Image: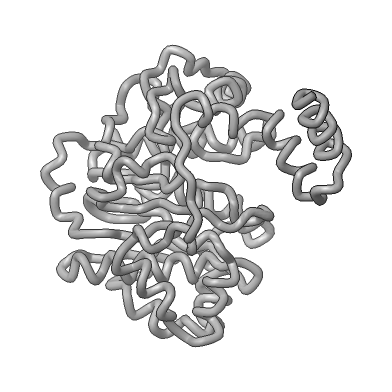
Length: 317
């Protein structure tokens, strides 16, 4: 799926994802779902247009309201995609690397399935309370759910129940958007509250920040979930770096550094990467950590650093 323009790097992300999918699945039918604004504009104008479009057997164009933002159009495509694509399909977000053949998905015994968000049961989800708060704005309380599902990879079979599910999902999303809720996962949780979504094994949607345990056996590696793309830290994953993706645009195709990650997803991790687990995972998701991190990057001469240095000096005495 692609809603894109020259100001973003979504086409570059989708190019990487589709290329890895095609290389590992030469017999698969790749379908690109896009909106008319993208199809008539950036899909024709980008330096990557020709090789990118050649990856797909079919390009489905949906005429959406051009006055909507790219984010809104993207969510409308995603929540409505069951009506636009024929047959069973595996939806894969653009910010992914396909690591191997996906043929095993055909045998998965469920009409609709997704993997757990952040590789956690909902009782242990690092953003549990914030997620509950968003869902409650929709009129749904997910506190008793076993899983909160990530919408980046979805197995969707062509059934009447799934067509109805997606219609409800889009309606719930629009209702949530009117209340200021921008992500599509709260409305997915609300729509799936009756247990319609089966749990995909974690290896089908490996989030790089939380899923190191599953990376060796990953079918699909999902990298933008780190939310570091605009931060000041070195990127956790190479493809989080906008400049890396823009070099594809400059060169008119895949670059050696991206080819290395496509061949071995482990190569995407930053040269210096430290792994945290247990309670430290929750600490790094707190407001306290974000507050300290922001002030740390204001410089080591910050007041916080000075006070901590004084404290250490006094404690040594």
